[in-house]
Image 1 (tube, rainbow, N blue to C red):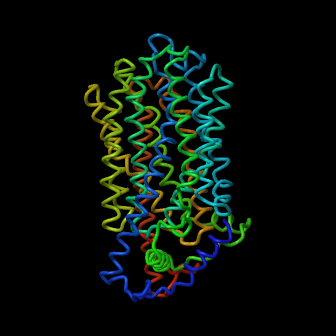
Image 2: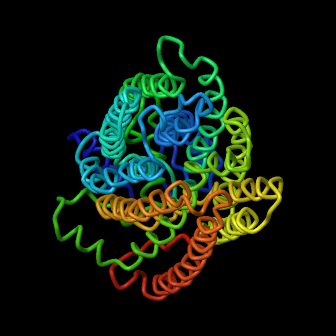
Image 3: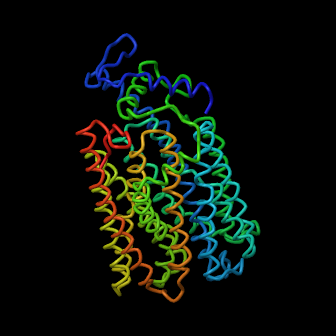
Length: 490
């Protein structure tokens, strides 16, 4: 972080956390109509500047990391799919998928610590450019070794993206505003499923053009687009409300400072990164409860993102039809995501919408696992997608809302994300394609996901009850035993 940004964040601390604030020539109260009008315009500017950028980032990370699931079925009847061309077994495909998460886990915390010391938007752009280059190189996969190496480095280059975006969001929005914002850019993961279905079908039709297989065109096109957009974001995306000149008025800047001071009274200057700070977060039991919640969510999400097409193709459909039938899966993810995150922000709660969504996902997996009709199983897959859709933004925004100080936030988000990805290594290596004897119905894999959805809902309930207890401490004593003064969002 440069000295100018440090000065701007120090200004935030100096804003008194009372109800009145001086804005330009006006003395306004947050309940005043003029203040609310300035705030409305300010938040609208934040939305127009940040959300499209984060939407694009998450769209391309979703499509670039999951395109391997598409590549292994493209033009399979002609033997032109990536699995056949690179002579990969199902177990090797699953190992390569898992190696992505190994790279992600190893570098998630270092990446999130670095982002507290450099220009955050520039670091996010660097992440995007780097993984775009690796995605482009995946077009040259020819054997097991090249597949493993590129999948591992794709994880290394993407490390820190999701927690980094969550940290930047926390500098612009109040806690009660983050759910729908994260939902809006996670919604792009659903669009990625939809678009990849269309593009998969299109690229299969140009298989052989330019002496390239259809799956090679897939990696080349999306990889190069990722690099180009990443370069643009380096110049366009702000790290704080005060970084870019000209896009906010002085009135809006003052309101932005005041919003942060009121919503996050425990905000402080960024302390020096120490082992003690990392250990302190490792000793916080809430980090592990959030980790279990996020892990269950990510495992379910990974199952749908990577293996929905595998489940559909086992119903007996051709590869092009599978790509098209995967589009409604993306639509259901998007629908569930937008509905539940909007409800979450409106009622200022994360736990209850999350619990309901996980129970819906569990019901969908049960239909897929235990019914015999292909129509019923496909309907169950759509129900699962609807329930799974809001899980990631709800759980990550809840975790983001639980920390007000920037270094603890950076460490806790990185730990939650990294530890959760360890579970993803298990799911990608041992479930679905990694469990050949479980095909074609994948009863065992879907049963595991039923258990994960129910576990996530149960732990969310336990965490809600515990945070209610801590909020009562704040009401009674003005702070918790560890000094937190801001009440937790339940």
